[in-house]
Length: 164
Image 1 (cartoon, helix red, strand yellow):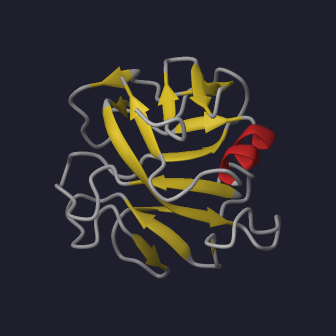
Image 2 (cartoon, rainbow, N blue to C red):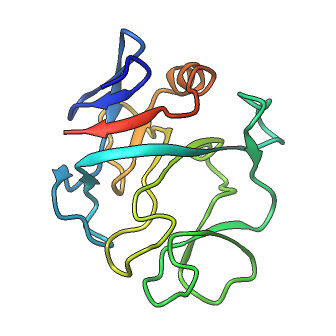
């Protein structure tokens, strides 16, 4: 383990010597992840991207990618672009990245089931803003907005999310 790794427990995320309260998937932490189970998968997941809403926040890092209108994430195992960022219109099931609420104003992307996605193994695991403390996600890791921003400004190439 490296000091710059994000280490997840069911209620806290440790990073750079600090602990942050967090929420995880409604299905808990699971060794066998599948699409729709609401679980946060056990494993070592690289942070591969940083997305942000440029109409709501400033870029948290120079390598952050803006979420533009029409930005979607495919969550349909039958889609050839399953577990990839796509653009509207998109004929398969997907999740909007540009949401009316603020959950995805800032998103850290992990390499869960990426770049070579196995259909049904589960789509993206993000780190994003929580709805409220303790409110479960669909498998992602959710944090208080100021904590997420603090973390996003300090991750580096090679930062990993470690889920035990």
